[in-house]
Length: 354
Image (tube, rainbow, N blue to C red; front, top):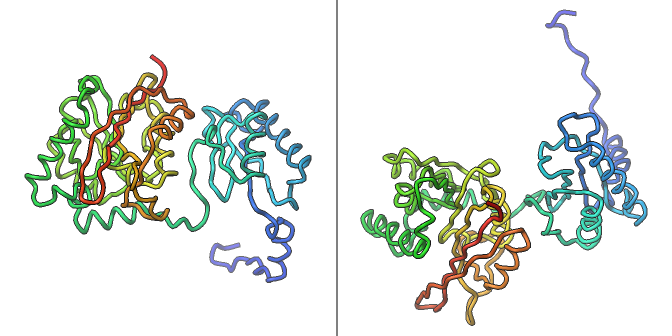
């Protein structure tokens, strides 16, 4: 047959055909779907016996509890998800929760707490990307702000001119690392979460071996590339707003200043988890968040990416330690404003190890 000859075209499925498929898949009753990495044919997958044991347990447990198919929970034995450093890996939708180390005892927690109880199991969560229309659009929001007035959105009180803006970066580096100056040394590999246009990185980079400036906004990074062009040890990377675009164990220090106060709590906790992954054993994590005090406002709507969230020290410590962080210190820096007097909390945590 010539390549120019007309090719047979499959008939377009009718509405009845599609409804038959929908019924067969059980979509009308599906509430959640769990994918488990258990590909017995892929030699690159995690331990195959381990993954198949997890799959057999999941099938049997969902059936035992009456959750399979008509019970609203669908399951799929997925091909290798290429994330087997601590596999088997399971993904639960629509919440988009990725779980690590899903041996039977972990799957039991996922089944009971998430599939039945509807609560994400933070203890074993790697990252969360909800399925469907998430109202959160950090990338779009911060790209728009970068175009509108980047300096004002980064440091509102210092946006009157470049000299003032630059001086604020020098001042904030000095204050933020007060008492922690020993963390800035020539062997340090550093990641800055929410670097913006590089306001603080300009004064951190000269003290360290390499600095990765990470931001959700490509527009901010384009401006940072101009401002930091004279520094040959700075690399700028655009992130997804949830995780760090770095390999595991790539850095020895992660810091973040006046950034995580703007992110919804689920996003902040995602960064807590991923900073632990990106750090080498013994690496340090230093970040700031405003402290919840009497009169502090309630959280803004979940899709708000600018108004501040206020945190309690005990909640931060609990969140970090549950993920495996070693809590080192919380220091308070008083802030006076016309609307509210509060403290900025500077948290210093460490990844266990050498």
